[in-house]
Length: 225
Image (tube, rainbow, N blue to C red; front, side, top):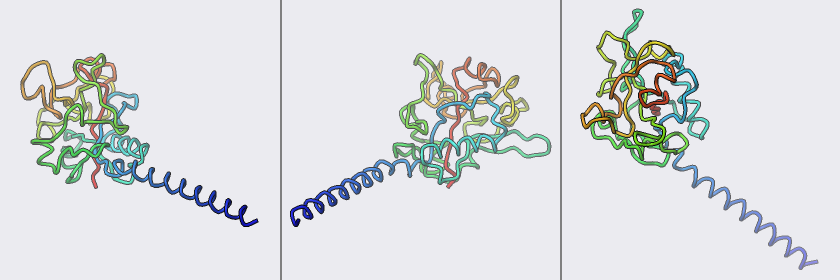
């Protein structure tokens, strides 16, 4: 009887230890995720540059973050808007908090807003999606290095009278938007070609038009807090 009781105790202790080990393993694997405060969207929701405005783009960033366990933060799409209908322009740099920002692997992207728009650590290898995947770029079979921003290189709305934000992110047909290159490459060696947030304008606002210039209607998402 004592032997049977002893065997039961050992089995119970072993099971408890296994549960504890699994729990600790889970905690360890989630650590980088809890630090995540930046990612490139893994896909476009389906309407090209039409996200339903800034609010819709923010909700999309929030939903993708939540899908990988990082929804406890307030997420913002790195997008500027033009002044329209009596509303002032919005600067992307003013929407994303103060930093620092880390990718899903815990790698530092930038310590603050000035560094983000200066000597940041954004490259093809660090500008990862919310899933931790590398986004294809120039030279890959499918080029998706155009990331929608509608911004100048310092993260502000363009003073250009032309549409640079696809109707403030409500158009999926005619129009145009400024994009950056997440992989810091271009057709030439000029600074705009290598700019992560302000490389050139798109040929339109539909998903097909965005693909023509090397994009997939992707966004940069930053945690505001």
